[in-house]
Structure formats: C-alpha cells, structure tokens
Length: 100
Image (cartoon, rainbow, N blue to C red; front, top):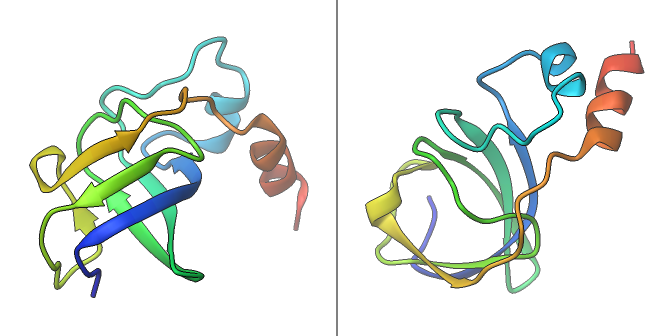
C-alpha cells in the first residue's frame, strides 16, 4: 500500500523497452513507457509503476493525492511538487546488462 503524501523520486527505470535498446538510445524515452520507480517518504522506500507518460526525473518530489491499495500510479493520482529533469540512468543500465 502507498499512502497519500509527498514522496521523493530516488530512481527511475523505463521497463517497456529492453535494456539493450535503452543503452543505444540518444534521447530519453519518457513518453509511452511504463516506468518502475523507487519513491522515498520519511526514510521508507516504495517501488511503484507509473503507467502514463512522466515529465519528471530523479530527485523530483511528487504528491500522491489519496491512499493506494496497489503500487500502480496514473497521472491523475499525483501532482509534481518539485520537478527535476528526466534522464535515463545509463550507468545503471550498463550495470544491469553486465551482471550475470
């Protein structure tokens, strides 16, 4: 369960495309992708999935408007409080590809 309140985005990974294809992209595919994100609130971390396009990046702050019984989020269920630029974490992708 994800409670309502403010959360800081600690990490984002697009999961609609393969890691290999993301590694070779020259632009960030923030539109049309499902994103797996780690959110933090009061030191607790939560994994959520954003099912719509996103317009924020790591270290952004979002406000979830109501308690959620699942970890799936749509655009109308949160507001951006503090926005940081979206960038693919190419180092993380490289590490995930190279680990057995």
